Length: 475
Image (cartoon, rainbow, N blue to C red; front, side, top):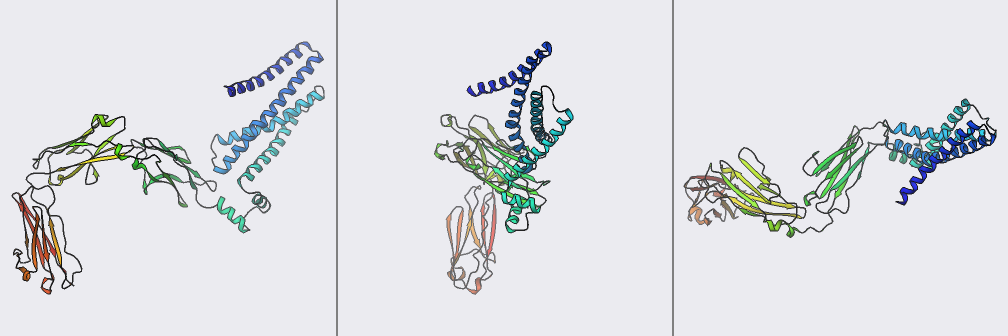
């Protein structure tokens, strides 16, 4: 409130001075009395002196800052240049205005002409501009380098000045970043801005944000990439999650190559996954056949949701599921539940499906299997051990994929198609049935006759069969 009152008094003071000058001039013109003219000149002198102080207190720092921005960042936009020139013109006209008024006051109404006023304004413009540019130049580099550059035109004849040139006028434009806040908590908004610092006039480059070496999309539900100006790029992430932690890279691609800067995103709040509610699922029906419709639901109990921001999703073998012509993922916003339906079941649909619930504090998941009745068994790929030598021992494991229903019949065949027996290979080959879905063939004391031998696992049920073969390579 006090600051507003001071600003109001300052503005009122300026207006009051000019109003007094106007009233004094009107009074002197009407009366024609010498004392009124002297009062008018006094008021005019005070107003000009006030304008002189105001110009140097406002326009001078503003002109220095504007010219520094123009030279440092090379942003020669439509508004920057006229604004800087306007500040210089105000400074150049303030001094001649005060001189002219002072002459009017001292010489009782006589002063230099308007031509003299214009000439003095041009002279002041050149001198003030030169001094301000010199101040800006000295602010951009060391005093010694400035003097040597003025004397010798190029600061490249000594080692120290070569270093100066390399740091200030060489190479492609460099990206500089105003990084993320260091006090981010889960659920906050994270914002980082990348600025392009040009090393010479006329340089161009394209800015982009990457994470883990991959470009970020321009817009998602939580992530937005904005371009406030030609030489800046802002990245904003709403509702920051644990998955957002990492290093973000701002790259500048230009004709001279690529330059990049890394910005880390760190969450300092303690993450407690136990605070995330555990999802529950009503799994797929137990008796499904090919071509059937399979439906599974996943939900979070209302009492466990509290006020957390929860998102639910389905994955299979680490791949997130999205709706397509056979699969539909339906999630109702704010309900804490999701449903997965699969039409026209196929053999490839067999597997484990995981429902994951995420919040700013972490994630929890639950996995349900999908089994299809009426599928033949499918054997997992296996191969014989490499670099076997005479006298070694080895095993071959035949295991079935999940999805088919037993009972299963698993047998091992030799290269001639005969079943492996305990007496095969002189008692060196044995078969061990571990379960309904796994069988192990053991071969001991490998001999010359075992080299190149084929062993085939055949698994079958009432719906069909599958087989896989391994070849022993003996060195």
